[in-house]
Length: 445
Image (cartoon, rainbow, N blue to C red):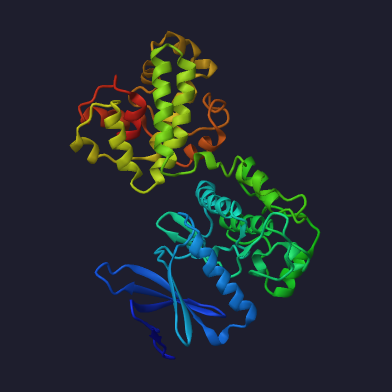
């Protein structure tokens, strides 16, 4: 089926192996292309049989078994596996963006909102695995691949089937990301994956792992220490983020955050994770908001508009989200747009977040009189955003801050938005300001 040369990539009947992407103790990974008409790009993990002992062979067979059965958008897909007299070949989904470690190094550290978006994808994959009693046991940035803005867990070489009450003692994974109970060679369970997630999140936010060391001896000493984990001096993260980090990096597994608590944590916020149903959830909320607005229940309408945006913003990050959003809005009947108009539009997250600010500000005390006099929320918005208003930044003292979710406050502050530009966009497109303003703000940026 295949032949192998010391100096050239192996030859497979259905694939052309090209550049070597990396190598480890047991395997070398190559980029390859299928020989068919599709010329599909794949990654081929080549495992030399002569390097395998009994344990590593069992690990490889478990990896193949797990990858054959799992199908999830945030887990690398095993397309096929083959073998010959010398090697075993795992044909894997190709991820063009490299690994998360390289991504973090290229940016030194990640903004909290980016780290949160990545964390949500990791949590989504772990939730899927946890429901099938699968533990990865080697979570680290090098084993998390990027395909566009989508993260995918990879390298299940140490993965194992572990029910919540199962315990093991075998040393697995990479020391820098190992939980203390594993490093200390005590009995451990699936919660070691949660510790690893905490280390990954810490590294993404601060550019280094909490136990970064010059030697393994120094690393082991730090991990074995009883001192609680502390964030770097001057660390600027939200309260939710800080809480999650410290609960993940709890040395005692008995008091560490549980999987159930992790999946429901406010910072993970899986409810608002970008996904194929984000747009549907937003549309449902907007329908309810329009109904409330037309019925004179303005406070309820404004709350629903804001809730809708918490789903619209993630929808922007889904593949094809912008075009889908524009098309859905047009079909939705909220805006009288032609096909040629919406195809020429761009979609901006800052516009969505600015709308959240404007909507939230409406229920603040200093706007109450204006709010009560207005016929609908749209009238209030037009009054709040006159021509020439300059970009705003939201602070805790801003009248909209109390009504706005803290996560949206943080996201809004990372960008500036000029409502004058938005209104100019409306006029250029021949629209009137009486149009359904929330969607106008989203679409014309």
